[in-house]
Amino acid sequence: MSPQDITQISLGKFKVGINGLKDAVEEVKVLRGRPDEEIAQALFDRLKPRNYIPASSREEYKQAFLREFKKALGEKVIEERTGLSIKILGPGCPSCDRLEQTVMEALVDLELPAEVDHIRDLKEIHALGVFCTPALIINDDVKAVGNLPTREVLKKWLRDMGPQK
Image: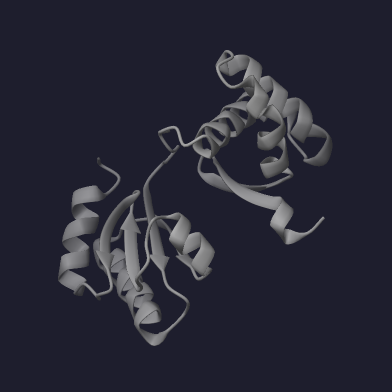
């Protein structure tokens, strides 16, 4: 199993790694247009042997697999979220690292919990539709590209998009 075979998906308030998701989605694409339950079950049947899936979470996994299937087809899906999701995009240059630090400071100032990911892989960054760094995405909304917002601007965005929304 190589790292390229593992895809992170959202499952409730956690991220889990799924082995073989991309291959399973490709195999199940022939079911496009069939009922969601059938597609979810087909994905589950292919992925269960290669992944630990607790019996108590089977339906949650099926829904997550179906969501990933729809994303792969280019369909609009609603991501499962339980709070702020922040993505800092950049290869790790000083500006990108400064943006990450400023985001963390703003979160501390506001006492807001958030899932913060610093995405450094250029292919992943481009897959998100961003071609200039540093960039900031809050709850799937691109807020800054190619510049560093001030701490006060960040705090306003975080308040506006915080968990109460």
